[in-house]
Length: 76
Image 1 (cartoon, helix red, strand yellow):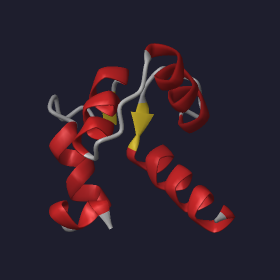
Image 2 (cartoon, rainbow, N blue to C red; image 1 turned 135 degrees about the horizontal axis):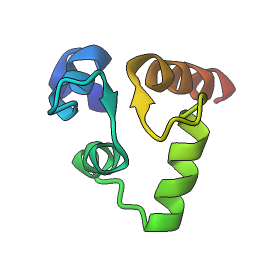
Image 3 (tube, helix red, strand yellow; image 1 turned 45 degrees about the vertical axis):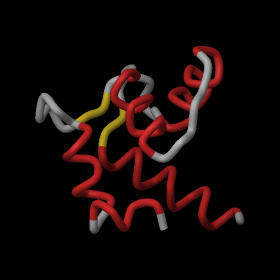
C-alpha cells in the first residue's frame, strides 16, 4: 500500500498538513497525489477535491480523506 512509507494514513496526512491546521488545501492534496505518482490537471484536481470535500468548504479534513478512502475501498 502506498501509505506504508508513512506508517498510517494519519501520519501521512500530518506530513502534508504543513501548516498544522488539520486540513489539506488543494495544493497540499496535489502534492500528496504527486508523492504517489498521480499527476492531475486542474480540472481533474477540482473534481477529486469536490468528491472528497463533503462539506464543500474548499479543504480536505482528515475525516473526509478517511471517509473517501474507505468508501472507495468498499466499492472495489
